[in-house]
Length: 147
Image (cartoon, rainbow, N blue to C red; front, top):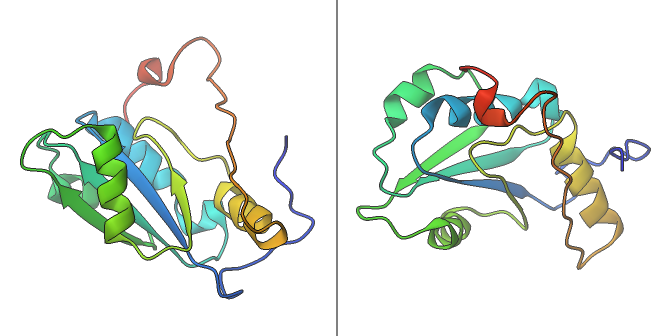
């Protein structure tokens, strides 16, 4: 289903959005994911993004230096591996969004993805949205090259 752009809500409608990304190494893919969430791609909405490193030793400083994004980026790290579910739960505790969007670190958000989530939640309260993964032609995201 294409993203509904008929009504373009912004987060000023008293709803705020948090994107939570559990991560375990694969720095290049995480960088691509974070870049896909940048404001020119997603619209002028106000949102926060939280990366939760599951004790993989991701270099936060290096990741931040390789992205030029205009959203608030929070970073949490576990001292020992606790798994993806615990990482998501930590992201929820660390963020303030009324709406939570979960992405994996090897995913790239399609243009308008966050606004589409916001639109759906503004139009239908109590909604859960599951997106479709569009696989790149010729293989997996892991084979697409470096960030």
